[in-house]
Length: 126
Image 1 (tube, rainbow, N blue to C red):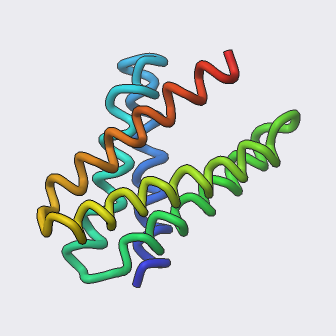
Image 2: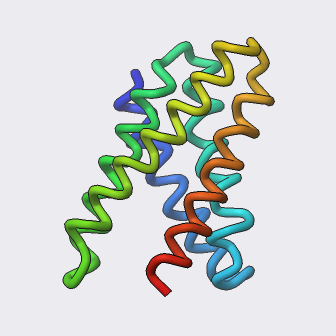
Image 3: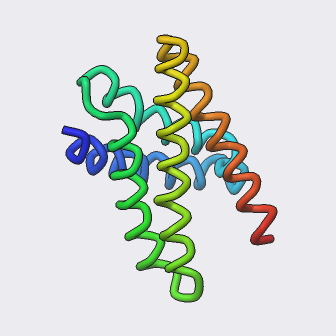
C-alpha cells in the first residue's frame, strides 16, 4: 500500500508543485511546497494505515529518479539527497507521532523539517 500511495502522491505533488511555482514563484520552495508534499505523503498513509516512513522513502525514490533524469550536472547528488531528505521527513513524522499520538503535530514537525531542509539546501547551493 505504501508503494502505491508513494507513486500516486508523487504524481499529485508534481502537479501541485508546478502550479505553486507558476503562481507563487520560487518562494514556493520554502513556503507552500513543503506543506503540500508532507500533507500528500503523510495524510493518506495515516488514514489508510500504510507505513508512513516507507511512503516517504518511496516518494523520495521517485523524486530521486526525476532529479537524476533532469539534472545532468548534479543528478546523482540531487537523487541521493532526495531519498535522504524524504526519509528524514518520514522519520521525524513517525517519531513525533509515536511520541505524541497526535497526527497534526507529527505532520507539522515533518513540514517544519522539510522547510528547514529546503532552506539549508538553497543556502548550500546558492
